[in-house]
Length: 343
Image 1 (cartoon, one colour):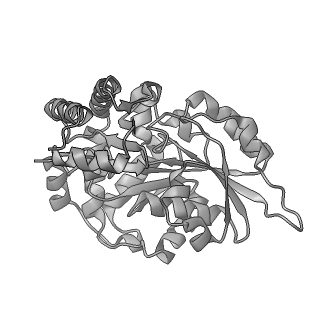
Image 2: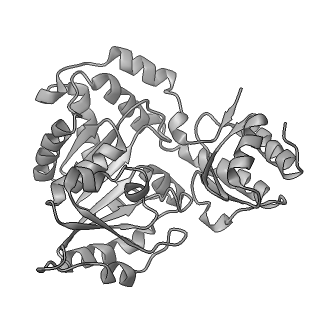
């Protein structure tokens, strides 16, 4: 039995989710007639303090829909240099929306307003105009770090005076909310659109939801169809998401505690280092003296799965299917690899 720390996307739906999926009331969602999907969209919109919401197959699709709705071909958008949109969406903004992607500096989840402002372009005969600023919370490649909610008013003010729309990639937004014991609205009320994912720490098999104004969601619905995301009796998936809203959010604190314990143990081992200040939720990045791919393979021989994302950096992610015993076994495996054991 492997201890799978590659991602929280490997989580399996709970028995309650499976029952809800089997018993879901269904209709044709392309016509807006699936009552289970409609209930989910209404709940998410209210939870995030927006007017409307739209179920999508993935967070990537939700992000790309938002970009296409907010921009025209030839515009520019701003993302941070470590963002999911930049690194893991197959150049979607350029391919789908025809926009230029520009970046601002981020370090361990921290950035300055000045760095963002300096990268905003004013359209003229030579340069595209910046139309959209994208944020990420929690931040994947920065170690699951949390965007401080007190930064949101200044980001909103910057967007307003620069005539930008503000989009939040909140795939793991509930992790941030649980970690700080706050409502997700402390972030979402300041943005024009927001995406949340259900297929990560919330353990659903499929699905993300995009929220915004009614006008935004009307256009997002059209773009979803364009991208092939118009599904039919999709209430079988939305039903699991409704269960997640009721049962899976508070338990994210367990994942955070286990990630911290794992990180603290690995930080004490030779050959590895961990920036413990960035271990704020359920993601742990480990710096390796040896090539990370070698360490990944050695850990796999010990029954621990993780991902070498960079030449000398591993990513570990805790989730519902990783219990205290699994953390103990993972720590033991790291210790053996640290001492030179291969299997």
